[in-house]
Length: 138
Image (tube, rainbow, N blue to C red; front, side, top):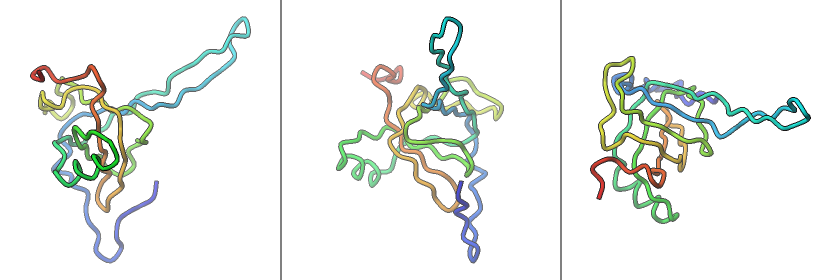
């Protein structure tokens, strides 16, 4: 992955934000020829990381709406986190190694609308997968 740190004015990663255990489920799979010459599909392993999830800002919501994308949340991840737009994202309910539980409004699975590398982190724009509405939704 490309290093986006500015050598003249380096911006440190926002370590104070890395408080939630989050998961990326890669869309890629490996295919092998098994017994009886049948195809065997194996999903790539999920990638866990410590990051942050929050509501999107109005500018991101408007920009996404212009492209017919419903934006439900934004996640921040450290550089080097293996994440692509084709993957799925999960915000689990249980508190992980950090001891902080994801707020219930963000718990669930998301499709990744866009991955944007910034100088200090990777910004992941998320759309909630249909049927994965939070418990309080109508």
